[in-house]
Image (cartoon, rainbow, N blue to C red):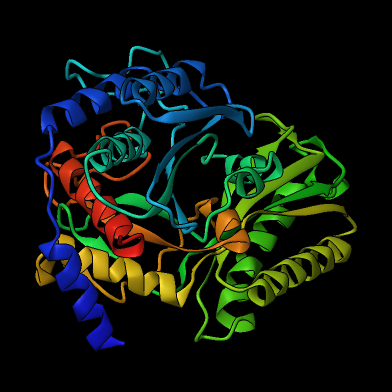
Length: 399
């Protein structure tokens, strides 16, 4: 396997590499950054990307999964095909950056770098027009990654039936990693995400007479403390899992013991068996504590994202392309898995493929965390991302 990877890497590295118009990549990225849109409401974003693809002379198909786009490029006679995916949606965050291309939409911003992902995929489409390969490349621009709905919407709308491909690949920028570093691993690379809601129904009343009430706040506090034992005492230490309380809502006021308290939170894991253990133990602990205090429990548990699980052979292909793109010190394999989530996982349940991290930087340029109002995609890594996509295509669809 190592010898084959070396041969493929050398072959790709020796292939002709186009001169990239970095200024155009930056212009695309900044244009997308200025007009952040949410979820499936991406008319301006999708329209802009489709317009750029058409200007490049690339066949486009729109309104897949509501507003998803697919660009199609065919060369040669082979029936081999592969997909490259970028997400398009932004976040409901007020941008605090002051640069010229900051968000023009109040309360919305590209705080996860999807503007950069889309710009890199546009750049790959432009570059591949002048390069040789034998097969079909599908450029998949996906809506609504942030809410975990876009990938499945495109699949349900016939993505893989209308555009049959052998494998699909995705890429996400990662602050804290060196700028342009390419990192990947086989199997689980990002966690699945579950959300829970615990509503405790007690008996409220005047704060001066707590002995007459069933206080759901005290019960909720006990449940939150007990939840800390789920990962520590119910999950195999060799497995990764996270259980976090993120919201507490109550109907009381300063001098009123509430009647109802709702606790919401987020759980992460890489295996369905671990997710099921978390759900079971959370329900058992909360129900037992509520019963002990004479309160009623309403419990819901929803699986939002599957774990993003890379296929081994496709991860090797991505690794070979990474080595053709970067020097060895800017390739990490296998990288450490992350407990964040991405709905690209849904695509990897349907098709073979792999998900890759590209470092956004670890200092003042690119080091700001995702989902932060000061975040910005690092323009210095655009060309690296484009070259990775080019190398992957030329490697997999060599003529």
